[in-house]
Length: 187
Image (tube, rainbow, N blue to C red; front, side):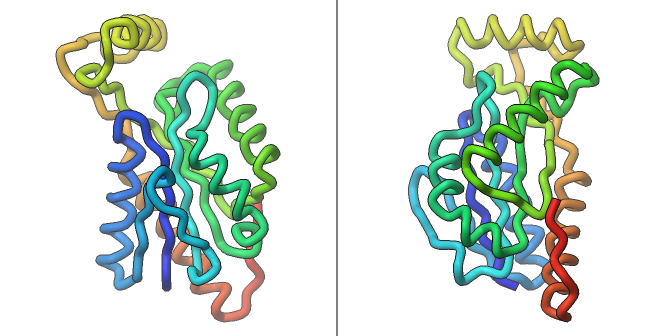
């Protein structure tokens, strides 16, 4: 299997998650191309599957990821694909926040014309050590409200690595089934 992973990140957690997926896929014997959406635009045509990862900040996904997906949505829609949405909301239990996140994801997919096989909401990280004073203050208030860590002297990672592994497993399984001639399911 040839897997393309395209990502967009602000503080680096989405890159870390995509690197993890890349390493897991390589260990399973797959060829992997890992691409930062800001640096390169590899066309998805030559790949069996594509995973696109983007963080959410201020209610929006990464602009470079949105551009890439919009530009290649027809090819992506003909393949097994996964959208990896990375946010702190995915670590919360607040129904209203989850509703907003689902709406943001649907808006992104509708705007780009992409219909991924899988959509996975994955918790990100609080990168207090990378924030400026204002962002650190704002993120601390948000964390306090939602019951997260308010210790700004260290970063806190909320990513569920087993969830990430399961996403890769589902993508790999779908590729194997499609190679046997089984129909590809879309969300």
